[in-house]
Image 1 (tube, rainbow, N blue to C red):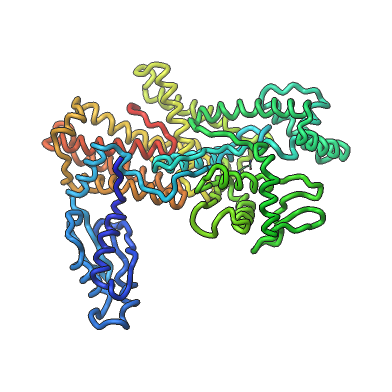
Image 2: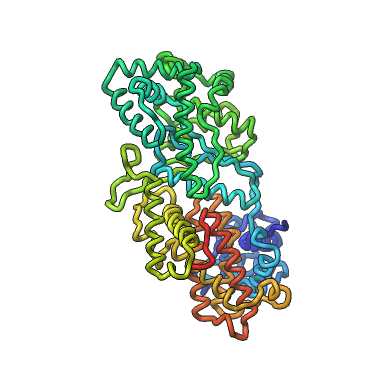
Length: 578
Ligand code: ARG
């Protein structure tokens, strides 16, 4: 598949050449190209003239000020049909306006080659996204929603760019909690069939662990027995893991998220290799019998093995990183957890750099992306552990609310029960995902069903309606897009055709920005604006039955393709009819 640079990159290339012809003998310059917020100034602004001038002013006598630099740069632009207008404003800002023909041609490429032609080129081929990663015996709660949907969207964006992604579920199946859980279950003889039973056992066991010294000692021995693979312990542990796993799979299925599990226990045999590598680099120190690494910028050390020789969360993460870099050859390793774990990640990443597993800069690279808390409608933190809000219940609720809405809008008579179910799921789960993704992931957000199912605001429901509208316009034309594509040309004329077209061709740079900042919210903002621009277009430009019908249908089709791709990158399943 042929791939095209983003519009921003194309402009950048043009200006790189113009800078070289203008001031190349004195300085080399990387163009600063920014999309304009206000169309009055043009589509993009190039903000280099001031910087160039201050660097060259002592070296030459040709240019008296940044404006004269900017003017000459414009004279040196290579011939191109891409730009319709260029100008210099204020202190030396260069403004450029794309030609309508360029926009139309770019969209025509999408119509003929598909939306893949808009995928940005990335500097890596293999990535690993570590996300969701719940701890066995605990039900998925609202905190896991964030990790799961953010991780899935990041993985999808990378996949769209032809990166092969290992979607890794780093399930916590190996901690000290298993000692207490197993001993408690053995003592009470409780039957554990569903994850609810397991969660109950977990709560009881941890109460006992805190208050009963004897039980605590027994639990600690229990972990050792498990880690030594004693038959009874190992078999029970495995059955508990299976109970949890079945529950997780159900929820992932509902969210349509695929994950590949390599749980903490998987890395157990690799921990000694990782430790040996740290040791060889002279990084390990003894501290009260524990083995630790002191790191720049932290008062407390990273604990690699505890006083009793036991491994920690960090030991496993070190081994996992070692494995991911050396065995799995991942070039970009992205961890998605709450911001509370930032220090843990910063510390073991630093250790990995000291050990020489990762370079100081560039790839392979490990990166943690943190997210904020989810607050309830009352503004208080939603807690998952002790009977807080479970993800499964939340999804049930979302589905039944959107089901009700669809019935209220009279869909019951029109659709089969099955279609209604499917739509309620796509809409309800989509609303929950989108409400999460549209926030800058680092901030906390308030979980509010009313708001997320609002048909007017920045919600999945609004985007779904816009998408269904595009589809319905195309459907109602009664014409075949394939045929129009072969016989008619897409022309961009009306100002609202132009603003929609311009936004559409900016899809590539939006995905680029979403990936480089690892912020799906950037893509959400883009899609929201796209829906608004589309609404503006079809309210002011008649499509079916107009003189421009064929061209406008092509514009609708380009919108449909890009909108669909964008929604899918967020993990949403748009519906053609709503
Ligand atoms: N199981 C952890 C938790 O629930 C998250 C694991 C994240 N991944 C990792 N490699 N540490 O908090």
